[in-house]
Length: 333
Figure 1 (cartoon, rainbow, N blue to C red):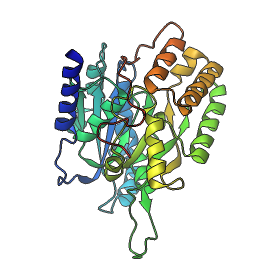
Figure 2: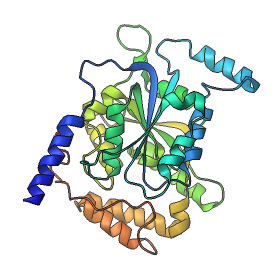
Figure 3: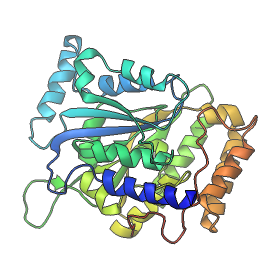
Figure 4: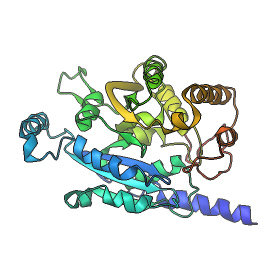
């Protein structure tokens, strides 16, 4: 009886919370909504959010007047991104993640920062956190950023430029591309020189195989996200791989995934914990197992079991195994 009741509650949550806005709702065309799924990220999330505002180059102090003027001129088009909204969705942290996230924005940006928890009827999974954040976002552009990742300077202009398609048959101005998922190139802090080779290999893979990972900050138009049906509901692992697979299938190999040359910087804590060689081999093992049809929940259990000293502090609770043939109750294609 209890499993049946939980299933009914989950279906009720989906029907009530996705989407939160009616289909006819209009979103801010000049706004980029950045969704950050977080779980026990108190050590880094304040700095991540602070740098989101600083590196947007939209709110520079007077000491950077020349740079601000150049950005203002580039943002004169009404369809250019001129506002950034940050949405932090906590998955059940046991530390001070929520408090530190609130401290990340100065008071004059407080209206553009929302810190919330995943609804109690939803299973704690990064895919569910990102879907929920997107459902309450107000921007016409969406980005999904890991809590330990720092964006490059002027990233709103990079997002806008990457998602523009030019030369359409009418011969008019460029229009937003609703058939592309974008991502940034990858880099790591310079403390471990061997990670430069790892980043180089990851960027080559992302561009040749059209397979960037979630720590490269996916960004897209809202229409693109809704066409793809969002991230696979309840997936505890590899939701990024599954999402880009559907993007390639739906929008085509060449234009479905675009990797911008600008580099973001993500944390090397996993490589420092496992060792660079072991982490790379573990990643490849997981991907090969996924390719041969091993379920994502099984892979998540294997991955946690292979970590030294048990699960990481931000390891996610175990979720039910999604169906391989139909990963999302909303019906992905």
